[in-house]
Image (cartoon, rainbow, N blue to C red; front, side, top):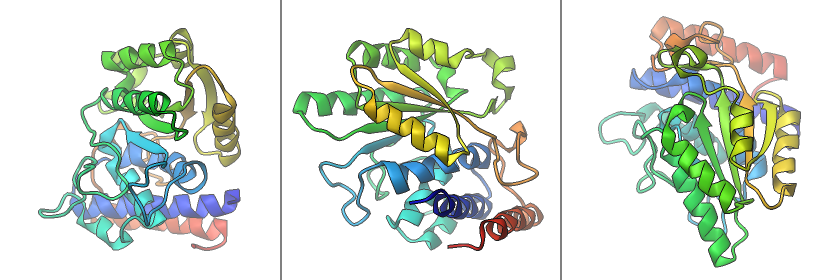
Length: 279
């Protein structure tokens, strides 16, 4: 799939995020939007998955460690065909299977229930270790937040992954620089993120989270790296694609009202036009 096709899908993913959070009147748009290109590359280019067979034994695994950006994951799963795009409008509604955080028991395509920050990487490490022990060749990917990696459990899991040389594990850090209380380096700085993962025996790659050439190169390099896990530090813009949300910590966990929703969808429609029309 070429970069233009990926960009068009990513814009549809962003529309789904904004629509879902607006419909729910709750949720986390900022980090979902900053991760949209990462989700798109993973699900449409990188991972071995089958929407018709979500539990396929040899599938690659994905764990959304920062589970609060579930709208981003749900939107890409819908675009990939795991469930109808229309269902995104039921996010967080009573009786909906699309809960505020991923639920592996009820949502097709979700490999791990998550949401308690810091715990997802441990689950991903377990999946990667299981593949090694069973002689399986599937790979495990996990997306962490740059605020989330302030949690100690992240580094316990990283220590184990590096020690066990889990080269079938890829940790992606959505480095948008903001968390619920403001700038990450004001709250509790995790910088330098790359050097920290290197200290835990990871191969580290820095990449632009919104550049598909860089994402393509990063995941290729990760596949070719043997004897150690890989961490991709994906430098991103919180709220990417929606003018008034970009680089604003206030949109970490705020739903747009009707007027803001209209503006957001206009912004995304403009991107469609620049890309040459929607899919």
